[in-house]
Image (cartoon, rainbow, N blue to C red; front, side):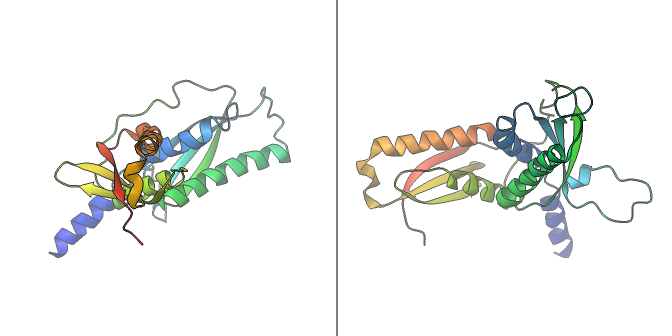
Length: 211
């Protein structure tokens, strides 16, 4: 039993959430900082390079932010205001991952004269399955939407069908407003579809029953 518990803990801690974190950051920052941020690269703790004679364990996800910068760009020379701009964006990324996923990260900056279209090409990775962290991320993301009549968002894992179920909790008379229900579902779809490395998911209306 002890070995089983250890194996479960190891499997849970080594699930690679890098694709999810990458998409979360791309959705929130690439268009917002167009012309400043080219892309991000996220590396899971167990995939990070360990330096010789390193005395401490790497337990955080690493985020490399690819900025426009350096000699020959509009952000040269690297004045105090330019440094503060980079630092602000890096902190916003750190805070976004911490808020949505609950994972502390180590954030680093790299600089290039122009964006390389290959920076954000997704590396083929293991398909994400069930994780409590994914449940939290979906609930937090959907919770940011202004969904009419929705009182509660609840996400569950359907083991039999290997899919996430997103339940939108309405007040009792929600069936009187089918157009609103469908509109809300489309809004959720637009938000969740960029995370299609998730297993399949479903969205359904339900009567609000959670405190």
